[in-house]
Amino acid sequence: MKTQLQIILVAIAVLLAGCSGTNQQSEEFERKQLFDFDWKFYLGDLQEASAASFNDDDWRLLDLPHDWSIEGDFDALHPAGNDGGYLPTGIGWYRKSFKAPSDWRDKKISVYFEGVYENSEVFINGASLGVRPYGYASFLYDLTPHLKPGEENVIAVRVDNGNQKNSRWYSGSGIYRHVWLIATEKVHIKHWGVGITTPQVNGDEAVVEITTLVRNDADAPQNITLSTKIKGEESGAETQIAIEPGDEQQVVQRIEVKNP
Image 1 (cartoon, one colour):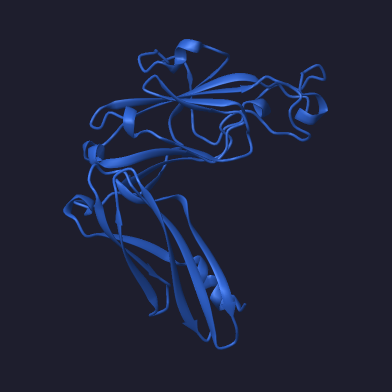
Image 2 (cartoon, helix red, strand yellow):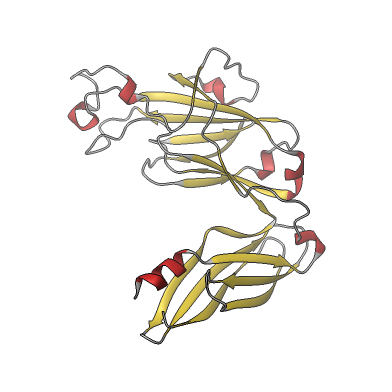
């Protein structure tokens, strides 16, 4: 495959156009927002820190990504030993307060963690969203059922890296990668919901196959037009589908590219 086609594939944009009024965007909003700034941190374990009303005024203020192990003192007696660089591990808490815009009442809001090491539990306004034991994979939680649009909200994260040894190399401890807020319409393309392949490629043309997973979290059935275009090309594809509330559909489209 030529380099030009590779660049085109990376630049594919998939758009949703709603056929019913409930799916049309009433105003512009940023779909993916960096959520790294102004977190509070405490080294130690405080179970009550999951509550939205907990007072964290004396906690340390910092920005992510953050690794508390590298901030500690080297000691050959630390449980992580040589694998952990002879640095401390243990348990830590992170908290962040933020005001959710009022116009998020009709959106689906998620929080996406690129990496937390390890054994993390995430809370929103005191409600547990789940536990992720593994520290080397990204994960996403739906905030929508517990979010308070137009009000202050609190996300809290408990991180437990005290079960040592658990890695063959230095892992660090904490929220060591970026965090994002993701705001979408109720009818949306799912996170990690787009796959792209090129089942046919030759010197004259290439066939690009796009698989897209569309979900309807609205209260009513939706008629959707899925439009897929290749940047720098006139070719594209449009597919009309109907999705029931709470359902999702996988749409497969094919686009021909001349002289790839």
